[in-house]
Image 1: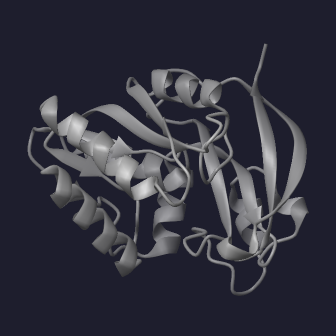
Image 2 (image 1 turned 30 degrees about the vertical axis):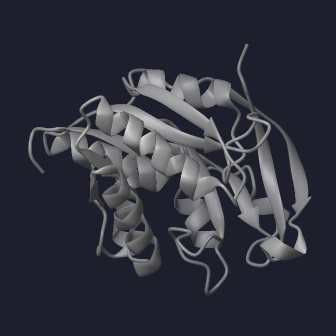
Image 3 (image 1 turned 180 degrees about the vertical axis):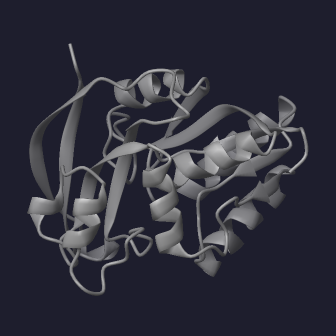
Length: 226
């Protein structure tokens, strides 16, 4: 990586956070995080985190957060528009936290090319469990905010993402959740100026429509700590 300016495709989760940390350690300036929200704008598209916590997270990471609202059908179009706007501001690269799923990388390179940006994947090709161990050993702290009921019961939602959580994962569930088994929200660690103050409330059940697979998901509701 060269000393250029990049934006981060930001979920708020552990892989995004580790990729951001590595990019900055390599000398890249990353002052902008971009996050997709649902159509209502009240929750992050995949992780279900409210914008107030994402804003607090970005502030502690020393970055500006830009959110956009999108359905799954218009996600790509709106994301490319965000990338093009960043390119017009002088950004040269976009960072992603994917590890080894080739279709994801192909899509990221396609949308970046459409906006005149270069895609960077700091975690690409590394052993998933080694990345998890690096994340925890570095001192990052995260809460599990979403689980896919096809892989994990509701009791895993809301737990700390730590060694105990990893030890309790059933056989076949990836430690990184790279296959969509679970998602996280990072609230503290070496990249943060201060912990993100939050409180866990309810765990909500969501049944996806048939056109999106029909699976049942569980979301840990988080709110800023007053």
